[in-house]
Amino acid sequence: MIPVILSGGSGTRLWPLSRGQYPKQFLPLVSNHTMLQDTLLRLSGLEGLQPPIAVCNEEHRFMMAEQLWEIDAKPAAIILEPVGKNTAPAITMAALSADAEDILLVLPADHVITDINAFHQAIHHAQRLAEQGFLVTFGIVPTAPETGYGYIKRDTVQQGVAFNLAAFVEKPDLETATDYLDSGDYFWNSGMFVFKASCFLNELAKFDVTMLSVCQKAISTAQVDVDFVRVDKDVFATCPSNSIDYAVMEKTDLAVVIPLDAGWNDIGSWSALWDVTPKDAHGNAISGDVITRDTENSFIYAEHKLVTVIGVQDLVVVETKDALMIASKDKVQDVKHIVDQLKKAHRKEVETHRKIYRPWGHYDLVDEGERHHTKRIVVKPKAKLSVQKHHHRAEHWVVVKGTALVSRGDETVLITENESTYIPVGMIHSLENPGVIPLEIVEVQSGSYLGEDDIVRFSDHYHRD
Image (cartoon, rainbow, N blue to C red; front, side, top):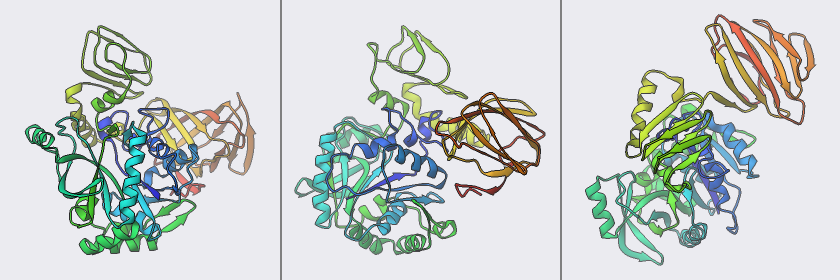
């Protein structure tokens, strides 16, 4: 069985922590591991598990690779989507990358499951059904009339532990959701699936031959770069956009649903995160440097500053280095409207944090003015920035930890702690960490234009333009 990890979401409902270039699946929200890492780690103990296939946005590729490496998960492939086309094309490309008889365990990268034994038992049941040719999904046994989830309606016909699948239903209003709960015939849609690669592809060929054809061409013409499978953007852009629910599962006669009661949560909002986070005696879920007084049933997250909260209840307070959000817990779904406003205003806070991650490490913009920026740069051991130049800015580098190998023009110099160097405007240069500990430098940029697009790359280890 091959885990297929879907990591295409943007997680905007968890802004300001989750952002376009650093969405929630790459964040450690409920444990010391990221949600992506937890998705794979909770599979530990399943027999016959093969290396995973991951599907992610092209811009997230280095985070995906590094986070898999951190938990020693060697992927069979990391398929890069140049544009988002929903779940059906992503799963199709994964199925085309596997052998026909392989069983695929399709999992979103951003869910929480607390009862691992129940989850493993459901997977065993699903695997047996998949070997018989069924396309299996898991329906979460509902605990409340939830209006934020889609639902699955079961049929009365059973296949052992599973029911035939009758229909997928969009998010209902409260009255309808209450009727669903009372009937006992509806489950929350988990977005998790188990099936044989060939069975899924055969069913897709019946219902959307165009999608299958485009995905076949995309995979056959893709460029393979170590673990990355780089799909051609022009080819993939012609693919129809659809979910697996409506492209295949609702149309096929082979779809079945297994009820799953395993402490599942998709962390779709700050209130959902409050639900699964340990709380103090007053019902507060607290992270970071926080002091409360007369405060109850609140979620308070402090990333950078001391946060004090007095005399409130049912609030969500989230502080990052460049943003602060305060919301009533019953209104946190409306954060999507704030994100929309930020997008319309072309605010960088919707896409990036102050700390920016790169394949070679990260940097933090600690100060900025009209003609200067100051950054703290951390370069991973043996990593190297691209050979580059800038038309409008000069750079001053001061090493505060480690050793830097600096190329500037025709010379290459080794500089260590408390030493510095200067890169004039227009000079070709590069920065490398030849050591075994992280390199930390303070960079002061000065010039008439300090945008990140003022860069001309001559060579790059990570194949960036």
